[in-house]
Amino acid sequence: MDIKIIPGKLNGEVIIPPSKSLSHRAIIAGAMAKGKSNVTNLIMSDDIEATIEAMEALGVSISKGEHEVDIEGTGTLVRKESTINCRESGSTVRFLVPISLLADGEVKFIGEGRLAKRPLTTFFNIFNDFGVKYERGKDYLPLTIKGKLTGGRYKMKGNVSSQFITGLMYTLPKLKEDSVIEITTPLESIGYVDLTLDMLKKSGIEIENKDYKEFHIKGNQEFKPVNYRVEGDYSQGAFWMVAATLGAGLDCIGLEKDSLQGDKEILDIITKMGGIVKDTTKGLTSEFTKTKGAVIDLSQCPDLGPIVTVMASVSEGETRIVNAQRLRIKESDRITAMVTELNKVGADITETEDGMIIRGVKKLKGGAKVSSWNDHRIAMAMAVASTQCEEAIIIEGAESVKKSYPHFWDHFKQLGGKAEVL
Image 1 (tube, rainbow, N blue to C red):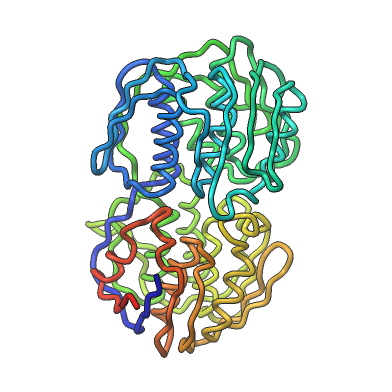
Image 2: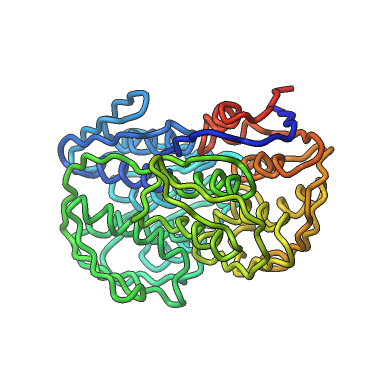
């Protein structure tokens, strides 16, 4: 789907969609418990559907409503389907690979798009250490695994995706033996680990955090049913908060000020670049101001990369985005993608190995056709960029937003965005 956007100002209220990160975690926690769980305020995006289907493949009964799920767990996972399709969801595959080993029998993981190329080496190293048999395709997927994990010491680097850590944190408490997850280098994306620890605590699972260097996990623990309402997603709210900083009159409803989400960092980034974050009676917003360049470290919040790049592209002076290597192994190489597409519409950006150097311009020119790279965050970032353009732009592959935010274009239009499907 191609969408043509005529530049204009956005105004109004936007209800921020529920956190995808917390939705995954809550559904899996409920599925691993014995008894009935209920998770509300969900959006059935492609990624969330993938996790629901994965847990059903492991024998869990899940009843879907429009914005909620009822989960009937037995406390034991069984192999109902031999193949789990993770679609394009990195969270689903990295959470479920270790969890699936709690059930007997062989399982095959498949995926779509760039998911097959997203690294799983951390798990391969663990399989080698613990005697789990596996076969992989030319890329990381398809992946067939068979065997059982046992308690012990699990070592991994801290600069790999925190999703590997989360997958183990859900799995190891169910083993007979005690375990330790040892982080051998400084841990990045701490906020995502905090989300996992908090959700597991709500589910009755105890994990001892030794300063994010080691996590001590007792075996023979049982998940308790959860009744959980998912809070608004800062990684999605960031698009609207930046739009407000750049001149849109928006109230963002549903973002929790005391959230543990790592992408809450967007509030500090906006402030660091000269924006003014405000708490209104309806929600959070950011006051229109002329933002200035800064050095932005994305090691703890890589998903903010695309929209921060948009803000920097029209900020005064130079912005350097650093420690953002993991942007290269997302749904697209988000460093190359943002440099390529924003430069098409008049930005001045150079990529580096771990980030970008962005020299701000007063206004983006527009007047170009840009690609989403089949990446939801690139599509949404370019939509916000269109509000800073002098001429219309066309976004190719605009349907990619369905991965995480299926109603994004509806919200964009409701806020006054002039977007036409071609």
